[in-house]
Image 1 (cartoon, rainbow, N blue to C red):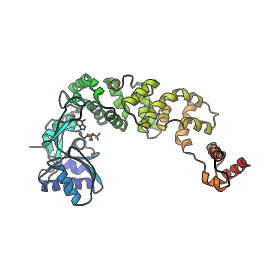
Image 2 (cartoon, rainbow, N blue to C red; image 1 turned 90 degrees about the horizontal axis):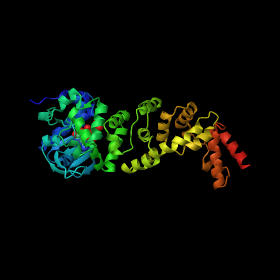
Image 3 (cartoon, helix red, strand yellow; image 1 turned 180 degrees about the vertical axis):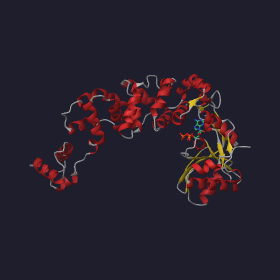
Image 4 (tube, rainbow, N blue to C red; image 1 turned 60 degrees about the vertical axis):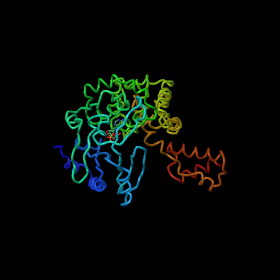
Length: 411
Ligand code: ATP
């Protein structure tokens, strides 16, 4: 008999999500459709964690279910994609609804051809056994665990196991996914899976820049991205992404420092990853990831900063001088620079800039100056700059002092 995990659903789903899961199972059942919680949420439930999202698969017509839900109210269709996949918001909760399918890959890295299929086949096309389980939500089968590939046992043994030999060849983004699960969930790659991963690491070259960046982004959003990077370095994954990319052992400590001060911006980790690249190599990384402008700035700024920071190791600088230089750099790159910096004064200035100076604004605005009779034009701009500098340096602390400064400057 299939194991039943209803108590886990009831223990770990928030009350509203639980009620919704029951309602979805019932509504689908009335339409003759079977609904399952599938993939990540099932894995998380079995680990005793609240699921991060509600991913559902249906055997049958997902669009009929989506329409029935929409007709009953409280349901918004946020996204509808090809392959009968929907993102819905039902009573304020987001739900991913997919039609159970099989996929065929014409060539490595290509998008798969998709057909509808029973749930067992849908589970068979997934990446790892721990992600290839489903829980039935219909009233008759509520809580029934479908685990045709031994995910529960692998989870209990702490293993991330690929579903088959060509797992990483079919889709090399699974290499990065596997490392992410391993490190986030405290698991390890099953021995044979690690061998396959090492064998097929070069298939990452077939992954498009946008898909690759998406996976890197998911790593950056992890609570400890450095663990994934360290493992990726060990397995030759980083150099398969971009030949000169490496994660040096010393960076572990820098990431701890990064998080010690405050919550780190995810792109600060990217900056650390890029910190040993030359300008040319950094450009190569930007191209490989088709990096958007904020990523590009962070990757390129870390190199520009290397030479630029020695001036900061001076306790006698004025805050306005520090601000004038550091504002040219992306803050996540400065966070990374601070984590790497060992000189006491430079550290202090970076910290001061990141936590305070970059937010300082003069109290008077351009409109206030116009109202005081300052003519519009470059002179007004210079006065605003002077007000900003005075406030940074603590020379003015109130509106009255700023008004007085404007009078002096105009005079
Ligand atoms: P997370 O907890 O990080 O959100 P998740 O397991 O929910 O992870 P998603 O990327 O949301 O991961 O994918 C949902 C499910 O779809 C996975 O659990 C897995 O079963 C399947 N899946 C996603 N990407 C792939 C892939 N590239 N190859 C095979 N199966 C995949």
